[in-house]
Image (tube, rainbow, N blue to C red; front, side, top):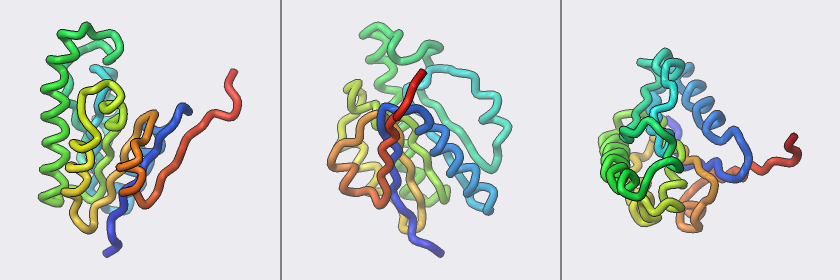
Length: 161
């Protein structure tokens, strides 16, 4: 069995979540169990992702219908508790080795929005079992996470319309 890696897809370009999800689907196609935990996505349409189950299981802990940017400060604080539940779930999954691939979609954005600290995310990553792959996405990659990762891809747009 191959040792699991930490991968990061970050940057201003589009496609980070798609690339991470593609990796989860590819792994599931090879018989691996994949979990995707989405942060800061609101209650966007989840029908397609639900069709990937049980091979790729998707989890969201936020309960607001709007995207995170549209929330009031009070609503953001309420969501902070839900986000903490999501981080705790991710840590539990890694400790127990429940899946082979864990995608933490937009988890890096939690630091920018002050919904989580870099130390909290690092603590989750330290719980990783030996053979689990973890993929993180977001616009910025803190140095501590960059240093832990075996693979870091900066997605930068070269041309936009």
